[in-house]
Amino acid sequence: MKRHAALAALACLAVGWLSGIPAFGTGCEELGRLRLKHTTITRAESVTAGAFEPAGGKPIAELPAFCRVVGVIGPSGDSHIEFEVWMPASGW
Image 1 (cartoon, one colour):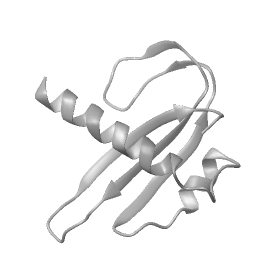
Image 2 (cartoon, one colour):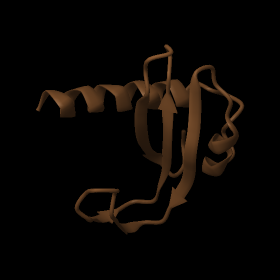
Image 3 (cartoon, helix red, strand yellow):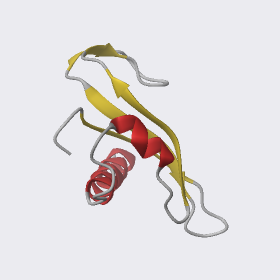
């Protein structure tokens, strides 16, 4: 349960962090070209509405369209923090 809470907190921080970048308001895929210190975006893709099956998880039905951003943060030499954020398809 603590792990889920930590992941949820990280996701909230990442959404706030990404949504505060004014240069990227035109499309989800553009986030893949975003260059941030100690951060690598490995995937930025638009996902259509409907069912979606996350890696290693159970399928989730009836989702609205969303922007899926996956990456790695390494603020120190010995860290490797993987993240995945799902944002609304528009309005961010």
